[in-house]
Amino acid sequence: MDNKGVATAVGSGRVIVTGSIQDPVSLKIFQVSTVLTVVPQLTGITISPASAQIAKGTAQQFTATAKYNDGTSPDPDPRPRHHGPGWYQGGVSVFE
Image (cartoon, rainbow, N blue to C red; front, side, top):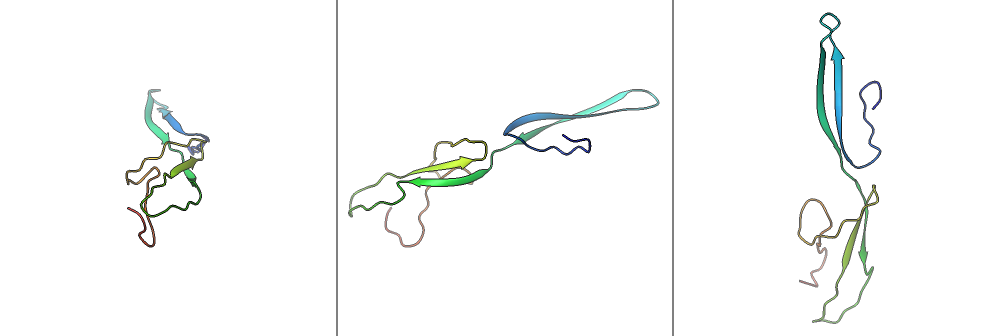
């Protein structure tokens, strides 16, 4: 936190930010706090295997791995949602 109140994230997590000021007449100190949460940002995703060939009627397991700027790689979740890797098909439908 700089002297102008600008916080720069250096890692993921939560921190309590507190500001205070003293009234020059009464000398009473006023203080307020808030919680700042820094979430990791997605930097990339890989799918393994990178390519595959399978015969009709057979199956192939794929694994998606997300990489975040804090070095974490959470387990993939196949349910569609707005965060975390999931499975979506594009182009011609060749699998179910």
